[in-house]
Image (cartoon, rainbow, N blue to C red; front, side, top):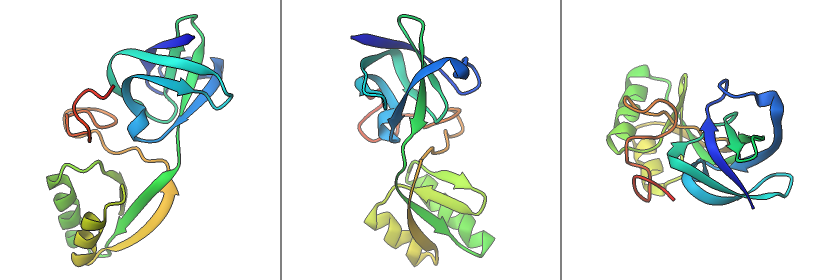
Length: 159
């Protein structure tokens, strides 16, 4: 079985050389080791030196030197909005205080569905909307892209 050994962020690998694509949701993109199936039907093993928060457009280099493109899968997401900037900031603070993976797009905050959190933000006056979209949360103050600082559900180094 082929093996992917090297991860490179978008823009730091020869993306025109990608021979296949693998589409993964947010949780599957934060891994070190796992079995993958490409969109074209090929099986391969992911075996990286450490867990990496992979993003849409990143590349994986296979042991034979070939490249594979990462695509972020559309998944259920909650979009949170509030017209008042002060209240919007307060909502963002509450989400951050709970260490939730959070994606920010201007005046829209995206989170994974969670009935308790949804009730909280609605209670703070937010409007919420359910969508299916790729999810790429902020990396935090210490982590770059993705979610690196140890609060990923399931532990620090996901296998």
